[in-house]
Length: 220
Ligand SMILES: C[S@@+](CC[C@H](N)C(=O)[O-])C[C@H]1O[C@@H](n2cnc3c(N)ncnc32)[C@H](O)[C@@H]1O
View 1 (cartoon, rainbow, N blue to C red):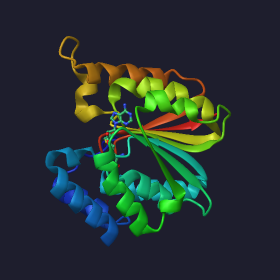
View 2: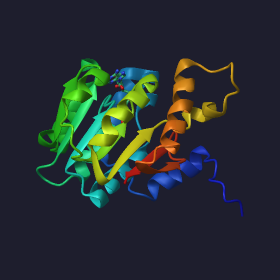
View 3: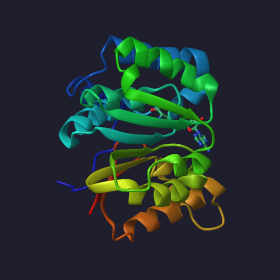
View 4: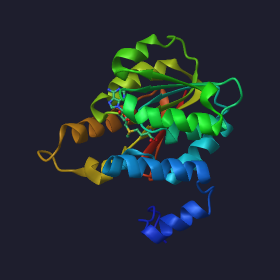
């Protein structure tokens, strides 16, 4: 048997989602509303199995202090907040009032609005507002690819030993293997970012073929 991960057909993906913790009615509504309101842009949303995985991780890690860069309509933040302990805080950065207005409604509906703080503005400018010491249990980076390295450098020192950084789209639909010369700016940024993480001795990374590729990095 091959040790490679399977390429999932639509049917196998649906099977995998159904046999994990499938989306409940609230998450199903958020996925449907994002698609109806935003059309093709809705593909920016994390995958349903990532949502269940994030709630699971938040519980296992015991997330009390988290940061998210790239909130969109709220699926990843909602998933983390649902697994957080009471009194925790997830600070979310995004540039879009339009997208995050949907997120705010779903945080309210899920009863987690008091755990989430939204800060609107370019994250590269705003991450410096966070305390400099290593206080974060969880970081999720899922915004503009060209700034991933900037977000990483701002956030790694702020994660406590034993905390976790998660980064989305690290396989970039396979374009990380694109031959030189055919690279867009975002593809080049993703390739350079993955090399940066692999060489970063402050963390122990694993790259998982879930969704569009997810790196989880354990802070030493
Ligand atoms: C891939 S989507 C995030 C998806 C989200 N994590 C989810 O689960 O639905 C990327 C988000 O990054 C935001 N974004 C883009 N550039 C940004 C920047 N410079 N600073 C902060 N957010 C940014 C976009 O507005 C968009 O909502």
